[in-house]
Image (tube, helix red, strand yellow):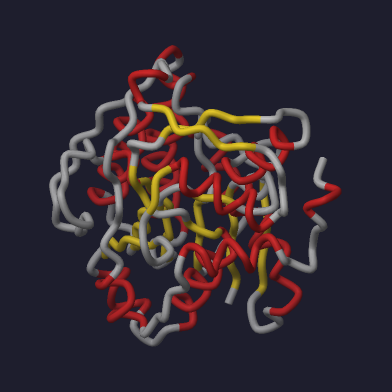
Length: 297
């Protein structure tokens, strides 16, 4: 099986690359923005004329939530219209290619009292969320068999993310203020990659892709950013103090959902998954043999 990973330099694409050597039954091809300009329909079409794949995993995204408020048109191209460009090219050159697309909890407004199901109505409150929802809509209206996986609070040992930011800040600061009134579920990129690979290997993959399935994935349980930060520093034996603050005390350009815990029961039952708790997943990441967090740069 030949698999294309778009966005190979991001934290999720890098995580897949890091695991690929243990997956001899799959033939991976990785491309970043230097290999494939997803903002250009011509570049995309030229690429897929010459390259055919069984599965495309789209890890590419404009992920700067606040910058998207100022660069909305570009965010819409990268997170939204690029999906349309890719699908139209695949429809011409290899329409049976299955497309796995990563989306976000930020397509929801946060006005929920219980974990969010796939059937709950999106209502993004940021331009980043709107651009990601546009991408979902582009994929859903295409003829390409596809699966959308919405994730929340993604982190890994690669790229830029909350976990690494907290660890790095703790090395130079005696205290850090972290928001305590936004609730979500941290998602380990390693666990997400294992989920994606489980889906690809599943006998039900084709059926769900033909039905253009939408799934939610995150690690089990929920917490605030403040609680997440406390657990990170506990596991790294840091003396830095974490101080809780409210959303109103920490002004940002983009609004964030107050509650974005995702219900994962559908993806668990569909593919027979057992998902780690967020604390267990975080500990596995902190203790990963691929890094030493006391030496993190």
